[in-house]
Amino acid sequence: MAYPDFRPRRLRSTESLRKLVSETHIQVSDLVAPLFVSEVLAEPAEVSSLPGVFQHTQQSLLNEVAELVELGVPGIILFGLPKYKDAVGSEAWNPDGVVQVALSEISAKFGSEISIMSDLCLDEYTDHGHCGIVEQDGTVNNDKTLELYAEVALAQARAGAQVIAPSGMMDGQVGAIRKALDGEGYTDLPILAYSAKFASSFYGPFRDAVNVQIAGGGNRKAYQQDWHNSRESAVEVALDLAEGADMVMVKPALAYLDVISQVREQVDCPVAAYQVSGEYAMIKAAAANGWVDGDALMWETLTAIKRAGASFILSYFAKDVARELSS
Ligand code: PBG
Image (tube, rainbow, N blue to C red; front, side, top):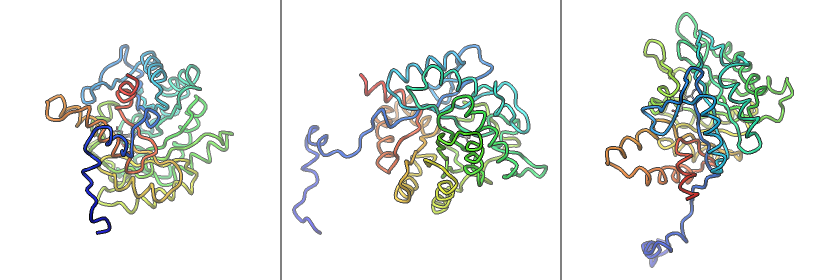
């Protein structure tokens, strides 16, 4: 051993000493708050599997963003719950669609105070719940879906999105979106690519939040990554960067710290991590039963995600963290 006399416990003996030698700290500037906006609700509704998270009306969404701005949270990411769904998800690119309306209101009021990201996918808008166009045989058609993603990107850009975040895991999605954006002069609009996104059961509560059920009890294993594998994440990340992504994401976070750390080594651009709905719900549910200390686990998990290499974290804890840091 290199240091035979080193006794690591010596540096753990007091609170102040531990503080002095601690390496990783969560700051409010590390966080992005995911927000849900509904076209049908007259009042905001709490998502039962995500305590503290709401399906918002346009008005309650603005109030929530105002609060986040006040607390210094630097980013939000928007998800929409449309009134109408169809086979192709056409509300996703309707200029008057629920997310487009929210984007334009938020950017008019808070555009210079918070980064407004929009998730780009079709699953909230399709009646079958898949992230793209479904063929007769039940498969999702990659290339036809790309044409629609390009439309959605343009609708979101025109409405005021400041970061476009494609989450559908179609091959070539970043390139298709970049080309469409550049074609309309949105050359400065950045893309946050959900690059290493796994087909995870941790998304369960999110599907309550957006009212999405996949037809016939299906799943997304034919397009999202298989969680037995980590190496293909490197390929996904490399492809997305080659196609014009400005930042890449790993999702979920806590069960994928190895992937976050590998991607951090691989690239020099910002690496986002998404602490997803199921990660939040597990902590909240266990804490509600008195089985764990939920607040302590919030800090421990977020710090672990940052320690693994995340540049910033999308998390339903964003507001709680900001509140605690400002109190
Ligand atoms: C796709 C999308 C999903 C999430 C973010 N974007 C769901 C999915 O891929 O099934 C999940 C986020 C979470 O669980 O918090 N639109």
